[in-house]
Image 1 (cartoon, rainbow, N blue to C red):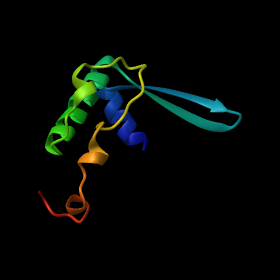
Image 2 (cartoon, rainbow, N blue to C red):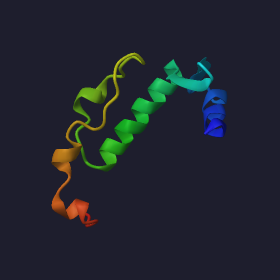
Image 3 (cartoon, helix red, strand yellow):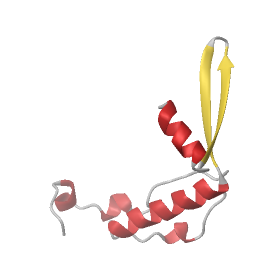
Amino acid sequence: MSKQCSILETAGLVSVTKTFVGKTPRTKLSLTADGDARWVEHRTALCELMGVDTGEFAEIPTASEPRGGCPQASAATSDADRAGTVR
């Protein structure tokens, strides 16, 4: 996992903070402004591929706001989709 964290940090998408709790190492990843914008673009593209209205995700939220999936993804998923059949 450290390799992936380093790649994301080098790309400027996350900031990495390493600490210890007692003798246990803890690594915290935080999205940078660029990483946050790229995540929203990626999530929006996935919602569009699924044919889901991105609705509330039209505006880019700040990095401190919670993340979520596509708002109507569960409602848009039919039995045929779950079975692997494309509509």
